Length: 511
Image (cartoon, rainbow, N blue to C red; front, top):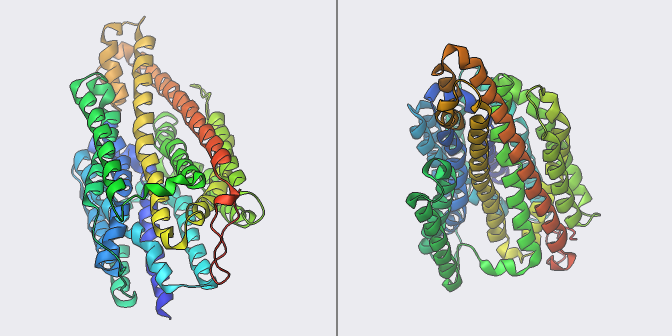
């Protein structure tokens, strides 16, 4: 087989692994929480540690690959991801799992940042379109089957195996990469933008930490105020570094084009609204409705499979339909889907989510191909790698901040509702203590620590409070999606797309 096809296989295997670990973990979270006695904040970090490392290091990893060699850095990323996966499965505590998930995210950032560059060096002309199509189908497939795979592994042999399964696959991918993939570098590479990397990473970490710890520490506490102030200060320093760099990590000049800025916001809004919501929907399906991990994965299939089916249709439509219609229309469907999922009651069955799953799944499928083509279609070909990296970074920032922000709102609402529901019961005096336990994911402890005669009341209050909190963040997610839809409609314009030479790939249709 020709070397370029071996390269495609190596890239697709690595991409499948790292994206599967974004979706596969969700259905295992309740089991992880029970097994490791994790608090609600620690459960959020299982998702956020991974997304945060992807968001903060993807652009830096791309620069490192240009300097040291893309094959070498890609193989190192695979190795780190594989070792971190093993450690995640062996984690003795929730804190250890969060740390190892962060290490997984670092490996994932290294792999993801070099994937397109490895394909671009081997494929040209029509074959590049074929290779990118296969790579895109790999991404869609990982998202589509992730919840089901997570359910099968978690229920069949234990949540640890959602991580252990990466080990043999990772070892095989490393061997394939070192034996079949050609090495390449950027001859014009000039080193790493360390100032930008440190300030960007620090700003995001402090912001997400403040959102996750805000309810427990108090929003006016010294810790939270310092974290938010430090995040803002580091972000200002980051912009200062980038404006002075000859080859910045994040080229701010790209945002002068409204279409690029619009595509970046659409990427953020989609992740912060829909993908961040998977954590809370999973907890609802398992902890409130009592479904097993596998049953939960099956119930997510209408959303994930429909997004996979609609994506290639959207890709073909982009040649005839304005891209702003696909981006804005897709987020509009996501917003409608989230709104339809709301209004849950204590008597609701999982089918109350079904219409929202179907509509939101169609919206996700509409957005993804158009988003990728817009991000790289409005910049010169020489800057397409930077543009793609920025867009992927905004996706991960959306997940990290969305999980944290929605979690802060959800936790506050749950605690407030528990106190309200217990105010006229025999355990009213312990209302705040019970609310804190429920808000931190310790519902079982809250029930068992209550007098036997009041346990039913506490359990009912916890259930109603959870549903109330979920309804509230579903509304907020829908509003964010609607705002993103408006931005997509307004900013993405046909005239911003770059006209490529006849010999190159045709630019996607704009809006």
